[in-house]
Length: 270
Image (cartoon, rainbow, N blue to C red; front, side, top):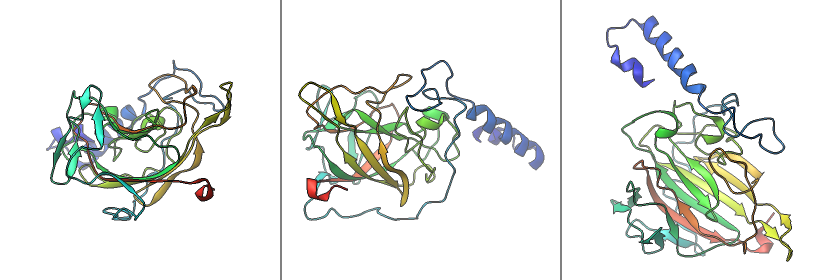
């Protein structure tokens, strides 16, 4: 890990031992004083929950995938016309075909709201690594503005399992860690089905999501347990079953590009 680079004269054995020590130290990050997730044995952000196994993803897969003819292009690399910020216009930086989080400007979200959809986007965490665990390349994709698919630099960067890249934050770790190196472009292809309530506010159907990261299925029609949050249990509250796509400002200069969405009709749902 990064601390080993301070000891340029260390022997290979000492460097390896120090790296192992740092790995275990970081892997212990998390909490044991948070609630138990419903239907699971783990605390929210449990420090003992196993990390997803690491695999090498496809080199390109859907990177640069052009939008299908019926897609809504949410970001084409030119401007933020389809996005708004917390207090008016979206103020993230746009250059060279990507948008980049501008620290302190807040989250941005789509002007439109959607029910069930297929979403494609590409992201890159900063090439220059600072910090560890949740400090590295942290952002998030919030479906309906409520349900976060974590964006994080999880390349050789242990953290709590339900907070690593691709996690349904605070609920489900990804099936695999399919992350690329810092600074490399990665893809998310997401299929989302909205929750529904009856007129009395009783939940009839929870939300479900399938996520493919860099060509690897990391969630397969996974039930979302409710709105995501830090150190809290997921909870559903009735709303009209439509919502925006929101991208998080977590203070790191994470980049996004090539974002498009297809609305799904009832006939297209599994």
